[in-house]
Image (cartoon, rainbow, N blue to C red; front, top):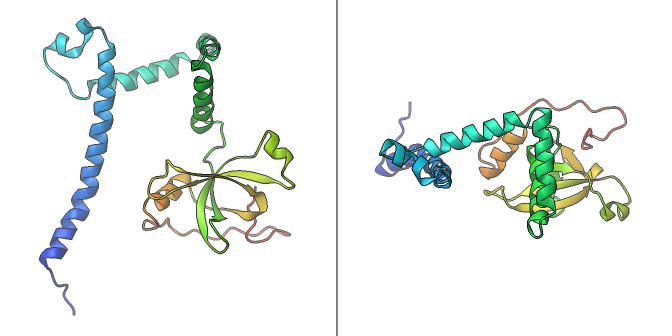
Length: 220
């Protein structure tokens, strides 16, 4: 029977492994809550909580911001709310400088956040950045516009995030038959990317191969 030798270095590293994730989580939460608390400055001075209650309430701005988002979403679910949103969009689109920026941001947010959209719904395995080297990407749609006129076969649009920061990456247009659809959720794929391959997703049973289809051809 062998016993593991305990050293000061191993004890210190064990403590870091426990505390670093907790510290980073608390720091991110504090940053988010602090940023959301700044929304209270938009209220009239006489309505601000410090003036009403006489002391500062940490997190109150975050609670009010989340409640406001929920109320706006609730109000825009009916016919009148949708008409008001369309009217508001039409006004902003005709404002110089603001209109193009608002339109671009809205298109991206509608694509990423809409429950009916297809962006980031599938994790893909692609051969990138060279032959024989593979990485994980996300299906974002199909090419359109004049790009489609210059493609000879079916292509898909793929976003390849960088590691460990997935908010930056590369946009690729790849032949449909050269991407492999993974039996993996988007959340699991993101964790795999952010952890630089350390947090591997649980293995799943291989998908059955349909007659006439290559094993590596995605069932799209």
